Each structure stands twice: as structure tokens, then as C-alpha cells.
Length: 235
Length: 235
Image (cartoon, one colour):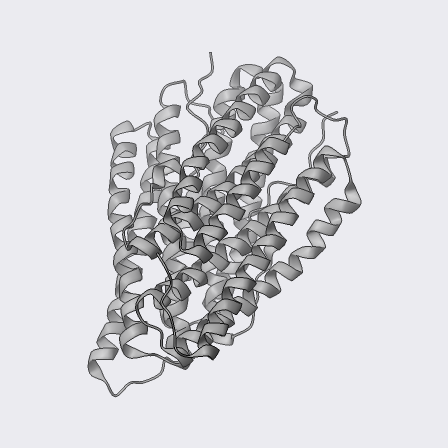
């Protein structure tokens, strides 16, 4: 669905700037999660610390974009699809800020994990991280393009992300049950994985909001989001 | 800080209705998390199933409140503090919907946990649940009253909630390291606790948005939210 066209060039430029800033903020968050996982893989404490300090920039972007949205609402009195676009942007920016926090949490785990021997082969979180970051990129593209098909790809992509997370979770659990000396490291790794899965959930939230924004129908499936692995029972 | 006064009685009534619906939605979510934890404690599968099916009502409330906000923005063209109030409501409703999802996740854990023997004394999640629910109630009161002091109480209350969660997490970890037969049940309980802690984080998010709404300054402390327990290391 194409955005409305406006005779007012200044208004057009303001909307374009909002889109651009949201994509930039998304780029910051994508870079942060990728770096946080690289810090785990390469046991790189300075890199983890860089992720933690760079979160300030994400927070500044949130405040700025929030203000842009409120100013547009107050001064331009948008209607119809622009109103939906701006109110959705207001919600998306909150998701992006929280994704930034998740990257910080992963970076903090990275610092913890460098203090003990690596938990091979289960500390490989790259696949989960790559997929989560690509889900975010695609969701934001869907938003600025108002592209429902792309948003739906993200929503379906979450199943793969969940599957990878659940497999890793199961492997870690088995490992921990076999060798109690790895329980702590295993739990740390589990929680890092859990943050990546939550990161992916936020991307799905963004995609669902895009579908709602464009179609006006609610496609959200609460039960498929944020759920932990399938029931497991002790012997 | 008192809300603006309006000469337009209909507009006043619409704003009052928005406040009322948000509190009602909050009440639904509070009841859901309390029931989900009761289902774990009392090993009550039908109660857990009731929580899962009642989430539809939470989702309907979200769509309705979203629409109320958009209608107010489009038709009333609010400025200043009303604009802030309505745009904050748009964000809060998303937090409430996700809190409903967390209650569903806890209810799903409750069903899983009834299928094996209880993990005494570590399955007591009541304290965490009570505190999370009371944090939400207080945060929503702060929102409708535009009460910064109450919001700040919620923000500080999150430290207690985190402390309870971390203690439970540590106890479970020790238990699991001592007896590998409880690793699976312990992990299930850990994740239920984690959902409760996330529930509390959403209450803190709401409180932070209230401070931002009223004062116009950002008090958000990303590092204190959503973090997992302090670093633990294998021997």
C-alpha cells in the first residue's frame, strides 16, 4: 500500500526524516546485538564494554524520535494512514529501545563468560544472533515500505528462531544434567540465548504492528511469542 | 500535577473513559498473573487453562484502547499535556498486552509442572507474583493520577523484585547442581520466575513513561531492567 501523497513539501520531508531516523536507530540496535554476540564468541571484554556504553546513543535516538512523533501529531494533525504510521512509530521506538537493552544484557553475559573456560560446543550463539538481527532489519524495512508481505515473512521467520533457541536450550539442559560442573556456565549461556530469542520477539512485534497499521486488522498471536521451550519433565 | 481542564464536556468524558478502560485492562492482566501463579502453587490445570483462554479479552481491550487513542488524536487534536497523556497511553497498552502474554506463559508452565512431583520448597513463586502485580497496579494509578512520586516508588520497588528473583534463581541453581534429577523441573521453575520478573519490568516501564510524561525528562535506566542474575561461575 503506497503512503499518502502530500502537497506540503515540508510535511513530506518531516515524515521522510522520521522514517530515516527510525532506520538509523534500528541500525544501531542491530550493530549492538551483533557485537554483543561477537564479544561472547571471541571472549572480547573491551568489545562488550563498548556495546554497553553505546546504548546511550540508542536512548538518545528514542527520545528524539518520540519528540518528532509528538510534534508531527500536534502540528500536522495527521489523519488516516499518516496517523496510523506515526502512532505505530511511537510504539516501535519503544521496542527498539528495549532491544538495545537486550544487547546490553548479552554484552554483560559476555563479560561474565570470559571469566571461566569456554563451554564448547554450546556457546555458539551466532546463528540465533544473525537471525534475530536480520528479522529486525526486515521488520523495519516492512514498516517504512508499509509492506505487509515482508512483515508476514518476519512473523513466520520467528518459528525458525524459536526452533533454534529450543534446540540449543535442550542441548544445554542435557549437558547440564550430565555434568553438574557446567550448570552455572550453561545457565549463563541459556539466558544469553533467551535474550536473543526475546530480541527476535520484538522484531516480530514490530512486524505485527506493521500488518495492523496497513490492514487495520490484528494478526497478533500472543501464544507464539515469548514462550519458553516445550514442556520438559524430570525422570 | 493536575490534568488540564477542558470546557468541552464530551472531550472530558472521552478522556475519562480512556483512563477507565486502561485501568480495567490492567485489572484483567493483574488477575491473570495472580491466577497463573495460583495454578502453579495449587497444581490446578483447569485454572491455568482459564488464564490462557481469558487472554482473548486482554487482546480485545488492547485493540479497543488503541482505537480510542487514535480517534482522540484525529478528532480532538490534543496539545500539550493531553497529547503526552494519549501518546503515553498508546505505549502503555502495548506493555499491558505483553504482560497478558507473560501470564499465559506462566499458565503454560503451570500445566507442565503438574506433570511431575512438586519441587518443594523452590516452587513458591507467590512473593514474586504478588509484588509484580502490586507494581502494575501502582504504576497504572500513577499514570491516571499523573503522579510522579507514585511512579518513582514503582521504579525503586523493582530493585526488591529483582533481589527476590535473584535469590530464587541462586537457590534453584544450587539445588540443580546438587541433584541432577531436578534440573528440568528447576529450569521450568526458573523460567516461570523469569516471566514474573519480566512482568515487573513492564510495570517499571509504565512507571518510567509516567515520569517522562509528566516531567518531560527521561529517567529510564536501561541497565537495571531485564538483566539476569549477577555473574556466576563454574568452579
